[in-house]
Length: 211
Length: 211
Image 1: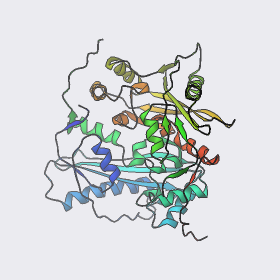
Image 2: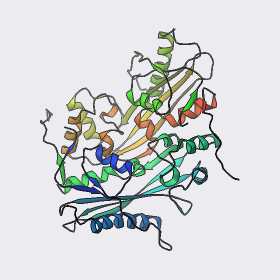
Image 3: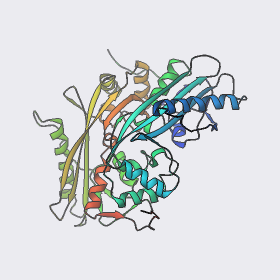
Image 4: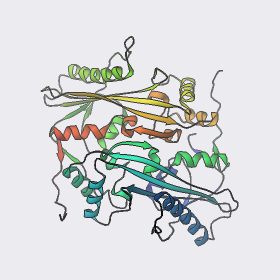
């Protein structure tokens, strides 16, 4: 009842467990292919342009590297970066790096940019967009920072935290899309899939709603 | 490693599975007592005052109704309301009610107020506070509203939606604490517990962080 009917095969061009989880929550089935692309920003490339380009390149890379994908496949890609003080914060290399990233973000507001692409192999109805969420961190004590880094959750995450995990208590407030910070803005992706009739609402008994 | 050490027994004055989940995520152990209190707003009572009073009354009710609670117990209580267009939206009574609440919220911004209380049975270090998060809904089609109400998730939720469930795609953006909308602002509650030494960081190997 609560899931969607799916009329096209999907491919997620990402190995992010958070993005997979967001799609699975709505009952969408998909294969995953994690594309290898050069993730170095161009000289003077703005954060927003970079994340948009990354997302589009991931989608394109999957399209060309996996010719065995069905001709009617819809490719979904996403890329997320944390941006603070004119710097892109990637994934921490080690505990010390994670600690220093989180120390930088403590008590401050940073931006999370997610680019997402929806490619339709057969047609020109492609979309690539980027949205931004502002995230304000609490003032974090040394003990809190150590506790969090030692939890191991910081690793593999842009900006060294996971907003939906234990890292939830590092955050004071956000402004914008929450799902965007988790992985990608699923609340924008699903309506787009519905508009194009790639997914639809399951047949359901009509509710008794009187006028 | 990632959990906290707990030095006092806790009692959650709420039967909300979301509040239980927020505490369990951090490894906190607690008993639950769901207090019976009159949840009718006073005449001309502001939303903020109402939710603060409810949270405090729930905590007090548990304290007096359960004398068998250990003398050093910490009582946590919370109350959440959805406020829109000068009205408090409670839990929907049926599908029609849920549909009309969500239709009202569609494309609009509403406020979610959570009151929370932390009572220390033995001392005067009590806290009762309220915080507000603004939530903006997407423009929702009739099909989307029907789909959501038919999922059954709307029932038992103030404002007829669950931001962390399927209802996640109803929301365009938020401004403020996300956890507040889920159940209560755990990011404020845990630091308060730490400050009072009711929980502490687990002993852990010191990270190698060079100066």
